[in-house]
Every structure is written in C-alpha cells, then in structure tokens.
Length: 351
Image (tube, rainbow, N blue to C red; front, side, top):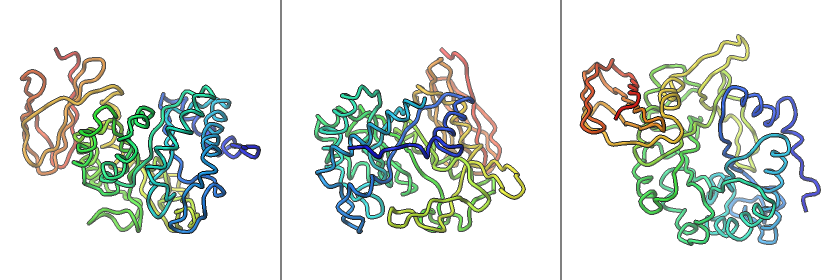
C-alpha cells in the first residue's frame, strides 16, 4: 500500500531531520507534527469543496501516518504529537470535516498506531482560529470513544483576539489541554486590524502586541503557545508556492528572528524578547495561579513552576507606573514598570 512512501527529501543537507538533529544539540523539545494536505490521490478531487478523503483510502491514510512516524523514528527523530489535519473543514486546505476526522482517529489511525507499536499522542486537528475550536470540535469530541484517543486540542490565532472562546472550550472539555499552535503576520491575508502592511517588522514596539496575545491566551487556559515562523529573511520568505494546496505566491510573513541574506546580519525582533519572558521563565509543567491588583494599562499573570518557584509576568501597555500585585497566600509585590515594557519577577521556593 505504501510501496512508494519515502522521506528521502527530509534526510538531505537541508532536510527536516537534519535540521531537527542539529537543533536538538542545543536543547530538549517535543515535536508536534500537523499535516497540511494528504497525498493528492486520496482525495475525491483537488477542486474547491471536493477535497474530502475518499473513504476507500481511510486505511491507506492511517498507514501513511504510521509510515511517517516509523520512518522518522528509524532515523533518530521521535514525533511526540501527531495532528491529523491543519485548518481542515475550510476551503483552502482539506475540506475534511471534524466528524470524519473523529471517525479516522477512532476507527483507523489510533488502531493502526497501536498495532505498529508507535508511541505518539494524537491531536484532533488544528483550527484556523480560536472560535472554530468550540464551533467545530464538539461533533467529534462529544463521542466519548473518540475523545479518549485525543491528548490535547489545538487552535490557531488568526481571529487575533477572541480569547474567551478558549475558556468556553476548556469548560466543555476540561480534561483536554488547549494549545495555540500557529499565528503570525502574513501579507496580505493574515494581518490584524491596524496591523503592519510590510513584512517583516523590525520595530521593537511590535513585541507588545505579541506579548499581550500570549498573556491573554494563557489567561484563557492555553498551556502551549507556538509562533509560526522561527527564522525568515529580509523579505519575509522564503515561502512555499502551491496554489492548489492552499499556499499562494507573494506570501510574505513575519518571523521571530530575521536574517538578511545579503549582509548576513541577524535581527532579533520585539516578538523574540517578549516571547522569551515566557519561554525562559515559565517552565514545562508550570501552572497558572491567581493574582490580583494592577491597573487597566497592565496585563499580568502568575505561574508556579515544578520547582516551586513563582514567576510573575507583567506587561505595561502605557506610561511608566508603579504597580501593586497580590499573589500566593496574600503576598504582595510593588514594582516600578517602565513605559511600554515587559517585566518578569521570579521568586524561588516561595512557601
């Protein structure tokens, strides 16, 4: 069935496995792997509205996933999370519905992975925005047999600010962690109101927008947050072009780090520094804890790390101010905050 399956491209000097192995020399990380598009021959057609998997190929698709995971494992890379489809049930990528995705998980993919002895957690699919989670997941997750195979729920951030819908999703499925797994600026299709019209963005002040997004997602039950582009060039590229698969040309985007191809200059964006205040201090396994105080121009959250340290992240969206925040058993911090800044306070072994 998979006689022509190969990951040879991923093994080359510029291949994904080469990149992953190089990156792993500098730290530990988990790999979450979503699929934009199944092999073309599995679909009814590539015409808009007809990009549904033909049921006769459901077993072939589950075998395809298993071959992918096994092939990577055989080459020294363990895929921790398999996400069946990216932004499905929309017109641009696969038109596959979440009801079908749920059936695929329950009846084909999960049994196939188990039969092949593959240790990988399954995610249902990545929605294109936050509201889609509560709108589209229930048709699959309300089937308890399907829900039992799902490890976490994944959404994208291209609504830009509908954070409360994630709390709605959490309240309906409190046992399933929520991840925000993709968001970026992309001209011309994915830019928030009053957002940039030219990419990438060099101004440090842009980091404030992203810092508030991370904070607001976490305050609405997000437990993992991933930005879409790590490194791009001075033109916001390169980008993949495949119009029939939903990847247009002239798709300039914004990264965490910009590398100028001509001058070799490396530029760390405002996003980089704001993101680092979370990724460096809020460690895997941390829990958000209650905190109160502040003022309307401040956005803040408190976290307890597995080592019992407490981290307080504070974004000041206005002029310089002195703040007062209460956290953990009536402890209070009074801190001066520079204008338009992010501040992290860490307290070790607070009891």
